Amino acid sequence: MDAEGRAEESRDVMGGRRLVCIGLFLSLGCSSDRPGPSDAGPPDAATVLWKNVPGGQNGVVLSALDAGAWFLAPDGTSLVWASASGIFETDRSTGATRQLVFRESIFDGPIAVVVDEAGIYWTASDDVVRRRDPSSGAVTVLAATANDTAALAVSGGLLFIGDATGVTIRPTDGGAPLLSFDVGGKVFTLAVDGSDGFASVLPSGGGFDFDIVRFDLSGDAGLIAQAQPSAQVIIGMDESHVYWGTGERYGDGGALVRAPRAGGATETLTSLDLPVAAGTVDGPRVYFSTFPGALQGAPVPPQALYRYDTTTSSTTLLATDLFYVLEVVTTPEGLYFTEEGRRLDRIVPRP
Image 1: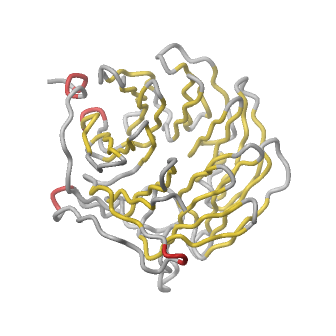
Image 2: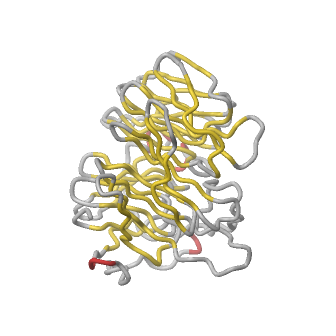
């Protein structure tokens, strides 16, 4: 059976472990050792996690993941996530998991995955952008490039593709490209909201400092912030600002940063012991995690999950003693994140 036909099937998924070391911080010497599913033990049982959380917030393991979880996105009553084995969805109420896309369409793992009501979109190491139809389960090719595609975003029926040449805007139904434009280097992350979007860009000269670039649907692009250390992660936007995380070259510090969406002074909201790894913006609150970098032989501080409140300018520690929290999302009922690339965790109600 071919990939398109198998995409219509579903099957229960349990177990598996795959430690993930992605290119979040080019300068942080993280290990390339990535055990595959055959190294896995039995899945973790549901349990109360973190005891060192002020205010008594508790999390539970929602689901043991197969071969690592690299991307996470809410979709209706489920969460969609991806690994080297395929793309899956997990019911947020029961934790039941089924496979939507099989390995033939993922190759050695997804590079970017996004979701909207019209489907799931992803790209892998073959530089092909694919879409899964939510009704039929059919997988189709939307774009094939050779430009080192690294980022995707979807908004208003448009798919935004970021790669080494800049940003390309295409209709999500598979039509011809509408626009392509240069943003000054290779795009690592994209965030789009309404009529404008933002990209973290590694300038053509290389190095470890990223630019934050704003663009609109006509392809007009402008610099928001320049030379942000290891700022590969755009966390998101609210009505007035865009937020991103930074990290020092050897992993011994980081910060949550923002700037006005229309341009203006950059503001450091909170400074941290470790680089910022992932996050999401939910109204006046910004949720984000830190990344366990290499600290020149010193003990590595535990990775943690935080909340920053823009109305009170305060930072709250939500969970500590975590490991490799690479995805953070919110839903009306809770906060969800992946830990160690193998567990889908939640804090309910949303803190």
